[in-house]
Image 1 (cartoon, rainbow, N blue to C red):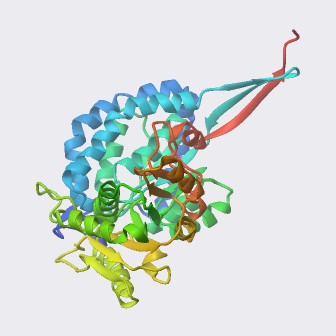
Image 2 (image 1 turned 180 degrees about the horizontal axis):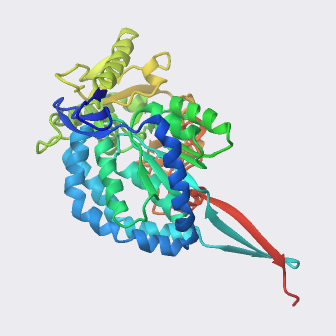
Image 3 (image 1 turned 135 degrees about the horizontal axis):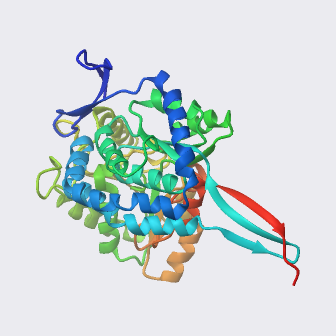
Length: 466
């Protein structure tokens, strides 16, 4: 992605969104000048005064009609998301529909989570009130270009904050459309898009905002935390992962292999909770690899708008080069190639399985964010747990085994925010999306997550005499 000059624009700099499958320009948006950001923050703060004066329920009712508009626009938004970042079209449309279908329920959950809580003892009657923080800077990634803005913006707005939304420079168009739909119903200035790259993102963090919500890499998250510390700003960071899958000797190997293929190669591996490290009991390693290779061979890769395509491209050439460099280094260090491994024309990397991996290899330590599944065997459950925890990351994990008590005991020892047993790491409705260790600082979603978008105020008075 590059910032390209456009002499015909009032703003001489525009951001071009490039289709990673074809290299074609999908569209452009004007870059937000850095020296404009303080003014935009000031305008947002002015707009927030009236917005914050409403109740949580009133704000939710203002936003509620946006659900129907998102549903009407889901196919178009999905097509745009697919063209901007290369996600298979059914998955991209599904992402838009997921946001629209869950919109009303999400509003209700946020309102309930932010309701007043009363605490009373013999002396004092207190009310815990969830008040707006003020102005929120939401900086969102490219891999889920509808869902990630949605999960950052909606709770911030219902909590009474004004929001400046800075989407990834890779996917500005679909985020712009999402903001446009919400702005059909919101008062002016409450939700403002900001376009650009890390320069604009950092300017937002350093501006007079009260809350920074960021989803992205661990390295960028650390810089944001450092910059936000100068003003002691509230920060919610959802960061990278290096998710392990532990396959025990009694696992349903068909189910485990199907999950490994799906979760390693979905969205071309460009998912924060992709399965990147697979630890398999030595006794079943050969059969597991055979089943995984068979399922991988059935995947179709190509233009994400073509029917039947399940794996699209890397988002850009830089990501492709990073993935291939990790694969080549692992092979040179002794890994065995089970499937894939080759670069394909354009930004495509074949779904790849590497066996005989070790933690001496970079690909087992650093986030890959590509269609690569790395397999290492183990001889005991203790060894599997030690390997799974041998990382600074701790977002998601999975354990497969038929003995649920044993699998649950293994899951309880894995240092991750979310662990699935014979399934992915996502929890039931109302659970937060939360990372442990260096994969998260704060969290979002679910009642506990929604409350992080508000300031708790304790208002107390003397309790009435009985």
